[in-house]
Length: 182
Image 1: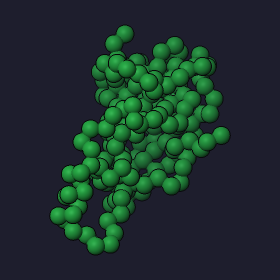
Image 2: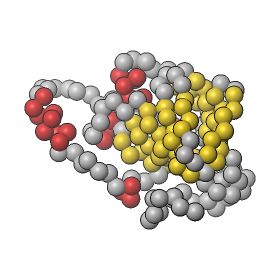
Image 3: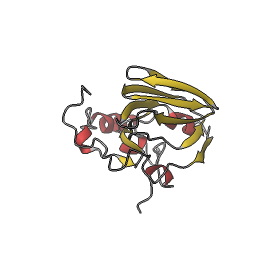
Image 4: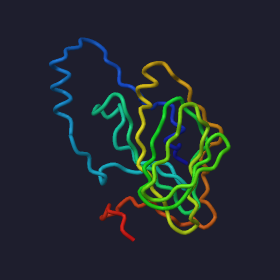
């Protein structure tokens, strides 16, 4: 089985600025980067309960200080239980679910923002056993790691089995309408 994205050890959190550095060259490089990334060009990783589509990461060369990704939780799905030093904002695009932060439950639904505070052990849950849920995640994790604030800990790994009721669920990879209408 292919390793999960979150279990890989070769991730790039902050790009190195190495060799001869010239601001003019760096600005030219940045301006040559795409300003729009198409979702259809970026595949989901992980699963089968929680999937991630990473739109912007330092390894892409587009940004250096923040990370933006889409999470999709299959029916009854949940993420790994983990903690990290950086804050994160989860804008809930669709679905109903909840977070558990340091042992306290916080319910959410489409249109809500779930905030994960610094050094919080947390986990994300889809409360619906039939429908998936999605959240757009914005975090400054690369900047925190660049500042050598390295706390990141996985307490409980992502399950490699579908949640009860989520058997046969396929992430919405080839969705044509991103307006999330029912």
